[in-house]
Image (cartoon, rainbow, N blue to C red):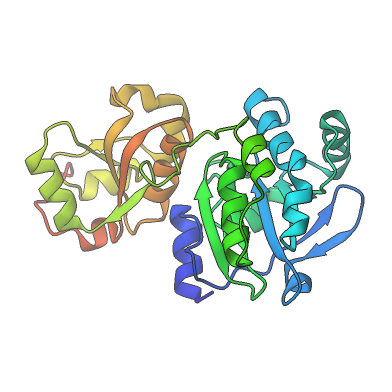
Length: 291
């Protein structure tokens, strides 16, 4: 994957793009085996199920639905792995509790999840997502949320030039999936300053939120911006009065991406980031400092 694409995925937590070469994931499975993505190249397709919780009914049903279709994936030359930040001992217990046959991989501090755009920015956890890598090591499918197993089966069947068996299609109907804020219609979107200004001018429901420090904000900010430092956002976001139509800005884009990711993780929609930050702001500027 090009360095620029990897950095953008990491900062904005976008899912890796279909067609890109997949990052070279390398993690320990719950039973101790070292799993390296390149080892499957030219042999098997790989389905990665990123998940955050081991105490959530939706996650349980999601993982069980994939486990119930393992034969179908195997028939399509495909292996399945779960990926999460829980330690191997907890993942071992969790796999036993659910009766899963596929391994769960331990991703400390969500380092590998970040490479795939499947991690929280404020806290290091694996964000629910499904990523499918083909035998050539390219991303064939990538979407946030608890994606239904039928979608995954159909994707790998297409890769192999086969149809999903009728029985598999009927059984797959039991879990329809849950789209989270990272799915296509809810994804955090990067915009330039002019686009942000146009959005603010055209729709007064949008709010510009500056997440820099107080001194940075006082020295130079957009007049219409609300100030809320990124490190205070998790316990003060209610002060914004809304969880939709939010545009985050900082000095150069990094902290704004963290803020946007946090809001998306709690269910916010229509969340945007000014990519170049105040460093490239083309609108009016104000200052709270005296001459």
